[in-house]
Amino acid sequence: MSRLLHVSASARGADSHSRRFGGQLVAALRRQRAFDVVERDLAADPLPYPGPAFLSASLMADRERNIADKAALAVSERLISELEEADAVVIDTPMHNFTVPAALKTWIDHVVRPNRTFMTTPEGKIGLLRDRPVYVVIACGGGFDAGAGGQEDHLTPYLLYILSTVGLRDVHALRLDRLRRGDEALARAGTLTEQWIGAILAGDDLETQH
View: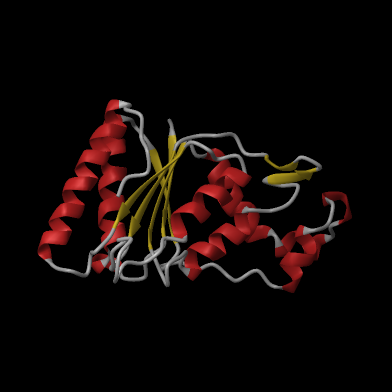
């Protein structure tokens, strides 16, 4: 059976817009294909921040690691294994302070590891994970307008860049903004989500949507 990894970052539970719309995508993908879904809820099951032992062990060659070093990398290895075994990935996340929330950044710091998920060469970093579809649902309370009152999006380009670093280049993002500005904005987000999911299921070419 194919496997889908679903990573959720919002701490708002049932009130989370990113969880709501990300969940709609997961449900639609499961209706189309018999996915075994692995849920990685970063709010319900918070990850430990990488500490000194993790950092030291992550920079060692595997042959140099002792039992304590391997224990320091145990969480990271579990998360990387979830990613390696997935045939598709869905990430739903809010935007915090224009960028990635701490919970999602901690997950990234565990799965982006030198000589494990990427290697450094004179030509730059090369991802070591096989590519597969990654769908990212981003929810933001404010707007991405270029004019007065708008805000910059430092989350989407960062995610595209960091995921490509480990070899995940087939990444598609849905940006939903203005979600704290009333029912009309929420209805618009719902429509955009339905259209985006429809395009995914139909196999249409996708660009970042907003």
